[in-house]
Structures are given as structure tokens and as C-alpha cells.
Figure 1 (spheres, helix red, strand yellow):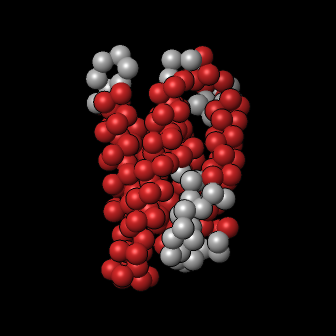
Figure 2: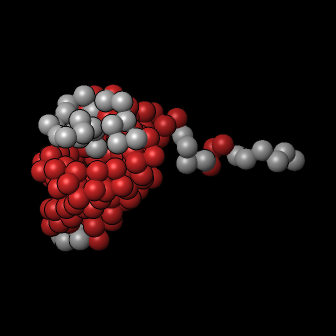
Figure 3: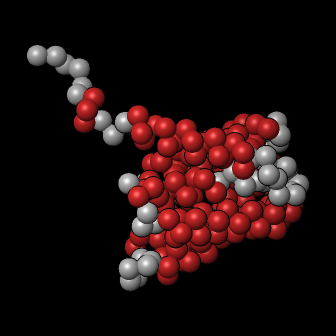
Length: 176
């Protein structure tokens, strides 16, 4: 008898890893679409992460969104330092989990539109006002207030696109 784990029962299938890689690549593309901000790291990198959270699961969304944020930050040279960007990536991963949780728990009716709308609102507010708090150690309240408008726009666009895309294909065979 071997002590090696049975790979057939692993959740880390080739399909799952391939999906993660594809959505991380989409995050890399989104990280090139910048929203004007005082730090330059605000972009459309988190949309694939929010979509992955809705379509594939909590862990998938958290991984994609965290790596997406780090890709966006590395492109502009980690303007708020590597530790702060690592904290921001962790914060975004948690927000992706909350985003999925809300969309599932408030999925009223077959269509689930209420849950998605509430998830977009909460995700936008958490990502902008909550995630912006990561800037406090570096620039204080001045930097935080300066970041809010761009974070609010980017968060709204990222979460809305993810929710609309998911809603459009939620019943298709693409997600099975």
C-alpha cells in the first residue's frame, strides 16, 4: 500500500488549474487598463477575480483577485510598498469571498439578481472605502481621501462587469 494521495480525488484537477491560469491572465490584461489615481495601481484587474468567485468558488476567486492585484501593482513598481500591496491583495481576496457569499445568500428567486445587485454594492463599498484603508500607514488620511474616488469607480466597474458577465452565462454549460 502506498502513502501517496489518490490524485483522482484531488480538487486540483487540470481543468481547475487551467481555469485559474486563464482568469489570472485576464487579470493581467485588466491590470493594464488603469483608472487614473494618485498611486497608479488602480485598474480593472479584479473583474476576473470577482467573476471567478461567482462562477467557480470562493478559493478560485480569492486566488485570481489577489494575484490580479499584485500584477497591477508590479506593473507600476509597487508604489505603496510590497508589504502594503500584499495586505491589499489579502484584503481583496477577502472581499471576493464576501462578494460570493452575499450573492449566494441573497439569491432570491431563480434568477438571483437581488443577490448580485447587493453583492455589487457591498463589494464596491468594501473595496473602495475598506480597501483604501491600506493606504493609511503610507500616506495617512490625505492619501486615503485622494484614493477614494478612483477606487470607487474602479470597484464599481470591476464588480458590475463581473456580475453582468456571470448573470449572462450562469445557466450555460460553460460553467460546468
